[in-house]
Length: 254
Image 1 (cartoon, rainbow, N blue to C red):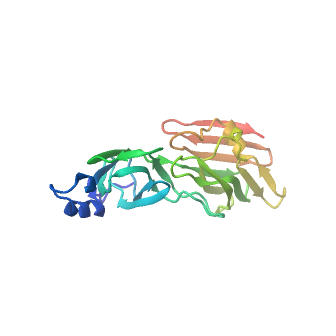
Image 2 (tube, rainbow, N blue to C red; image 1 turned 120 degrees about the vertical axis):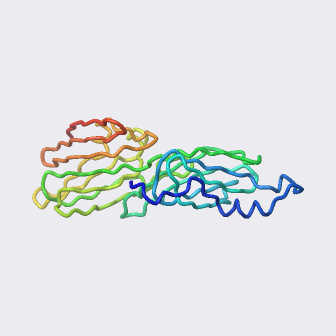
Image 3 (cartoon, rainbow, N blue to C red; image 1 turned 90 degrees about the vertical axis):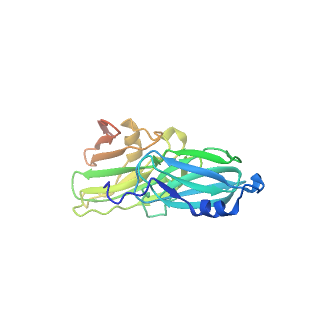
């Protein structure tokens, strides 16, 4: 990502500006805002949405352009106890679409914002895996599964139909963004790759099982991307996982 046009280190939310003018030294401190500082540990381009909930009702939504790594923004919010989440991208996938480039953080429980100040360190974790498919010969493909997104607060996969047909200029190279999956023993049907090449008829490739067999970790905080070469005739697959650092490559048969 380029480093031009950097945002200022501190972006003050509109709620904070309103609160500053609404609270004086003589005011009842319970009516004064809690100043929430949201601090980021990674670098993004785009817009962060911070959401606060009380008693299952959404009571706070604030958007800010994402600052640089280590940047922060400040909000003045009514004092109380909240559950917070912050995200870049949409967490629910419409049928026929692929996962958004989704990064999420969740407080994973109630947060006490009844004091004057609250500091929230936000670790925006990657909730999708980019799958680069390399087929041995021209064909059309579709990917199907039983996960349609990620829960905003538990960060667990959301059950539901997933179906996406990626496009390719040469019929050989495809790319699709997959949502976080549950490991196969947890109960969700694994991902399936359907291949049609005009010669062999429709071929079902157990993509989810093969990814599992490679040692890929769907429970990692931030999901790694992967490159997969599929020979649907010889019934074998080579998977290269691009983990932070070195990654690994494994050949599996089905």
